[in-house]
Image 1 (cartoon, helix red, strand yellow):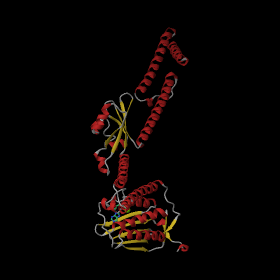
Image 2: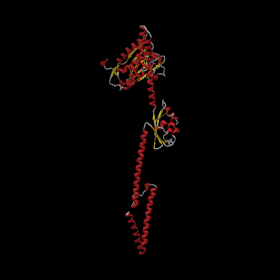
Image 3: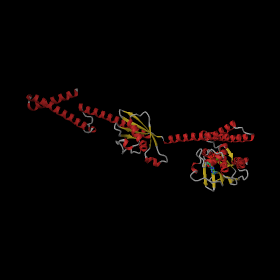
Image 4: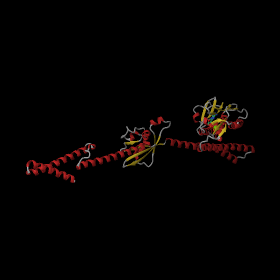
Length: 445
Ligand SMILES: Nc1ncnc2c1ncn2[C@@H]1O[C@H](COP(=O)(O)OP(=O)(O)OP(=O)(O)O)[C@@H](O)[C@H]1O
Ligand SMILES: [Mg+2]
């Protein structure tokens, strides 16, 4: 301020002195007045310049000039620079925040009071089948027309989520239709945030669990009912010794069936829950095959005492396989017992072990049995899946054998291959990776 007064006085004095020099003492006041006026004019002009610059482009502010206006311009420029920086930082934070929501595996949609889309992440756009850019400001209910969803959005009661079918577009790309869980969270008055979650696999797992429990109950109930029937007969009817022993024999069969079922279920859950087998426990194939052969001959003799089966065991290479011997044995025996049980007496069953040119090892069981129709093959390894329930039940099968084989194969990194032609027999093979197969050590031979 003192500077302003000083310049004002200087201007007045200079003009007054000029006027005195030019016209004499009479003109001193006129000079001083003209000086003051010029100072005011100059001041107003500089103020005007600053104001114009502020109105149009802040960058055009005069750089550090003298006097009050210079300082005002300088401070305004500094303030503007700070504000720009704050805006840029806020913008960056917003972008980071949006990028984080984009990266979320869940879908997020923001809608305004009228239900128009304000923003959506890519996941939600894909799940709802909308376009995150093009459909902005569109009413969401015009794009997602599921009646359950429309009613849910209009209800303003969002204590629970709603589960709807995904759009037809994405269901065509998938083997299963998409199932979406949508939950709305109101915020900032009447605005709403929708969180979407793909619950397809969750629902599938839940359905599988229900099927599994139903299957287990059914499989246990059948022998249990038969057993209860026999108990009742024994309790109520006067039976002679031979009849009694026949009934007891049948009862033993049923309880054995239940025991097998429970054992198989336990084996499966053990296989699912235990750690992967190490690659440093080697078992000789010849030993596993010998055990299989003993079991197979016994089973064939029991099932078909007159004709039996033509069984042959061929070992092309004396190899060792890395893995858990009991699991390998169980998988190999399962395949072999199937071949014998489903091939009528007199049929042929050939079991081979060989190493393939690329170092992998193949255990295969080929039979001359009835074969399996192509539509059943992909489902054989499902738990409780049987091609012919009545036939399988006759032979005491529960439909868990191949599920166990598949698990053992997976755990040992082996490929499980099933080839079969109706009327021409079947071939089940386990192909172990080269890393798990080696030539038997000399001292073992
Ligand atoms: N070698 C085979 N020839 C023809 N059908 C077969 C053969 N192996 C399996 N199957 C069919 O595949 C189904 C599934 O076999 P899996 O071994 O899983 O069950 P299972 O033999 O019925 O019962 P489990 O093995 O649990 O006692 C069988 O019910 C049978 O219909
Ligand atoms: Mg079986």
